[in-house]
Length: 89
Image 1 (cartoon, helix red, strand yellow):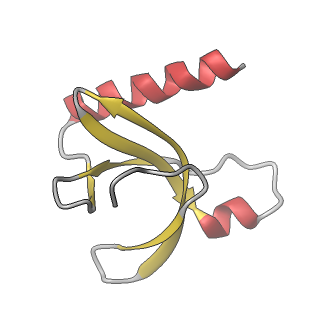
Image 2 (cartoon, rainbow, N blue to C red; image 1 turned 120 degrees about the vertical axis):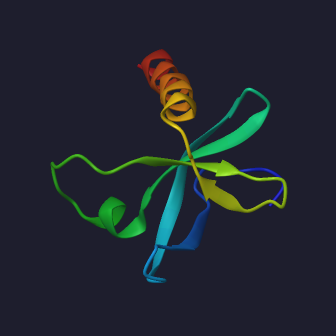
Image 3 (cartoon, rainbow, N blue to C red; image 1 turned 90 degrees about the horizontal axis):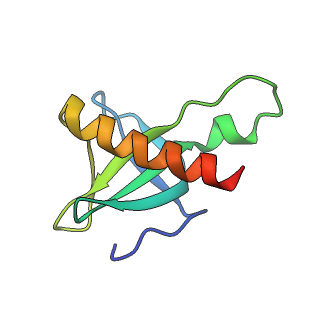
């Protein structure tokens, strides 16, 4: 995967090898790395007033998504996405 496309749907596996579909809600570059804000497709399809869970994944050198490992990296990435949301409002 070379470029992260908003709206793209793909499957990830959790620590129990259970597969789940996620959709890319936004993408950004932070410190030279590509990140995606994603949410579970099942949650996005539900018509509820509840907040959806959004989490961030990093695109590694092989083009695979990996979880963010450190609190510092998470804080930087979440701040960038939060700023993007605030600029859209």
